[in-house]
Image (cartoon, rainbow, N blue to C red; front, side):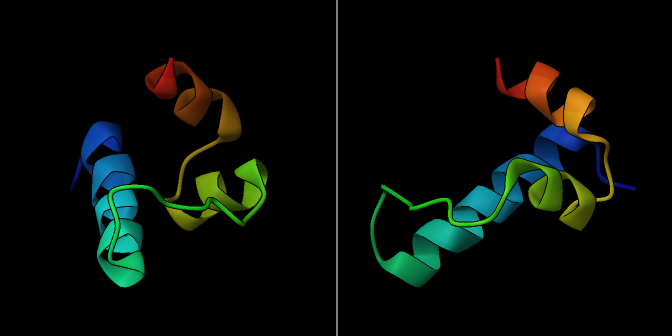
Length: 49
């Protein structure tokens, strides 16, 4: 199973590839993003700091 850092980075990399830019617009709610990668928002928040 992927660890949280890999899940976050893979999702952001996918968004970057879709947009064709290094800058991505994060359009979903933070809670929804955490749910999408099967983590609770608090865990994702700690990893992004």
